[in-house]
Length: 254
Ligand SMILES: Nc1nc2c(ncn2[C@@H]2O[C@H](COP(=O)(O)OP(=O)(O)OP(=O)(O)O)[C@@H](O)[C@H]2O)c(=O)[nH]1
Ligand SMILES: [Mg+2]
Image 1 (cartoon, helix red, strand yellow):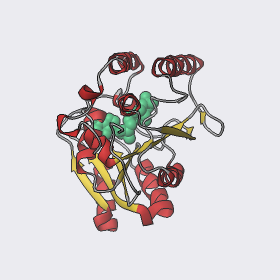
Image 2 (cartoon, protein in one colour; image 1 turned 135 degrees about the horizontal axis):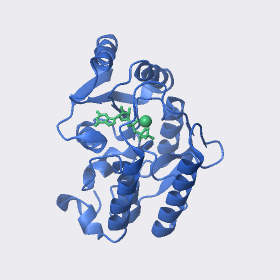
Image 3 (cartoon, rainbow, N blue to C red; image 1 turned 60 degrees about the vertical axis):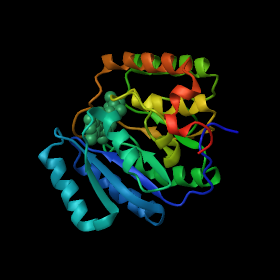
Image 4 (cartoon, rainbow, N blue to C red; image 1 turned 180 degrees about the vertical axis):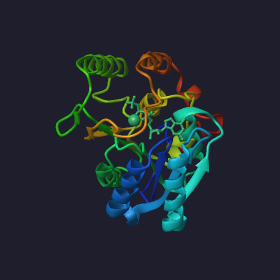
């Protein structure tokens, strides 16, 4: 029996949009998702925090007025990006959740492709890669590219997987799966944690391509030196027991 929840069907999707300082990028992200995936959408779950700028809040409030129940706004209690995602996992009402950002670095044109892939295998995770055919990085320095390549290869070897982009936080996951796992990270390494913990449980993970463009407004919340923090969760999870990865009431099939 697998150690992760079996999911019969993709019924609906909650798209999680963390927002700090995005205005036009958030607006464009929402428009493209609605154009391509409105029928499958349970809600757009926008997560804001105390540092979210007044300009971004103005856009969030306008979207709420325009789109009514399709928009759910949550003010996070836990800090940072991982905290925002973890609280969103608990609140999502769709059978599946899409993790992405609102700065257009996670290309919203890929949302409908993620959904189409997840429909084929609803218990699995479909994640995006900038390294496979059809994917790309624009505006990454040579040093950043080499570091990223080396990092991806090291962790693919460590986990015995063919995945090529485990740190890119743009993927679709079953909601029951994300609620069965004990999450630890609060900052950006959460993006890695959300793929390596499922891998340790034996969850199938497939990749589709996505092109990365640097944000055109606002600032990243992830300074380059913080990338080293990914090693801690990456190494620790490799040797963690399945029992410690699952919440205590979720051991065995869900
Ligand atoms: N609600 C909320 N949103 C956040 C937080 N940190 C980042 N975000 C948003 O999450 C998305 C991803 O964060 P970024 O800081 O751009 O991180 P990134 O794109 O992974 O990192 P870079 O590659 O360095 O740009 C963006 O839309 C941010 O505005 C947070 O603490 N709370
Ligand atoms: Mg970003």
